[in-house]
Image (cartoon, rainbow, N blue to C red; front, side):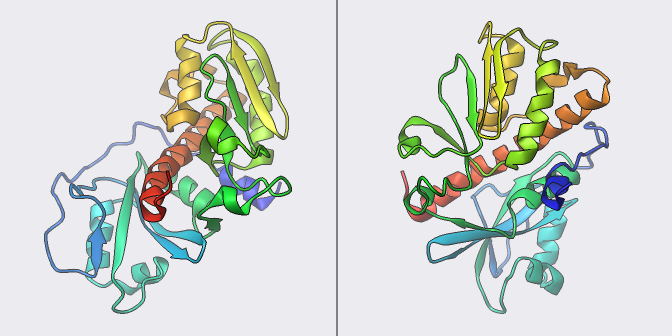
Amino acid sequence: MDSSLMQFDLMARETLELSKNLDPSMFDEMESDFRPSGQNFKPIGPGILYRVVTGGSTFSLRGIACESIKETFDELNDGDRSLRSALKIEDDEEVEIHHFRCDFIEQAEVVMDQLFNRRFPLYEDMLCNLSDPGYSWWMEPNQESLIVYFKSQSIERENNLIKLGPIGDDLLAHRRFGELKQSLSSLFSVREFSCDERRLIIKPVDSTSKGYKALRDIFESGRSPNDLSGFGSSEIGRTLFFYLNELASVRNFWSQLAIKLEKKTNLS
């Protein structure tokens, strides 16, 4: 298997109900080279500390997956050189540090494997064309069906489709969603299902069913698929459930990042 597929196919096999010893205290107010993003910066538990590094028409993400966002930030604030190096912070450089909360550190590692230490164009549609569809997945806004494009070559896509971001590997998605067909019947009735290397199409009998809405929410908002836990105890079912959790985590991160990028570039 390709190494990139193996990385993104990493499954958090630990239980989703890991005990959390959360520290509710806020960060101490002090003079620092690091400016936490947001006025109510109260990170607790595991997650990612990261920064957005822009250069010309591209950007990249530098970050750290950590068991405790607060403790890691405190160490960074105290001048830990290994953390500064991981975030590519030069001496005397003032940077803005963002955070993303996760349920457990394996979730943070999945997000970092997929998105970090890569370069992305700030203006994807301006740089990409029919011969180069870019990095993002896209979804049709129609609530009556779930249609996700792993690669979209439409020149009108920003006007007609929902941009999901680079939330997964195309080849792995083709394989995993091909396996999904046999499991959907336990969740909701399906009128049409197809999946190829270009797109996924799922049309339910009832678009208001709880299972269908939960599946759609993974792509639309990055919501964890807790309502899709009825895959059963088979190995394929468990693999699909963890894969959908991974997709939700990456989509959730990217949807938050997109807001920051929009402010940075003044894109509408």
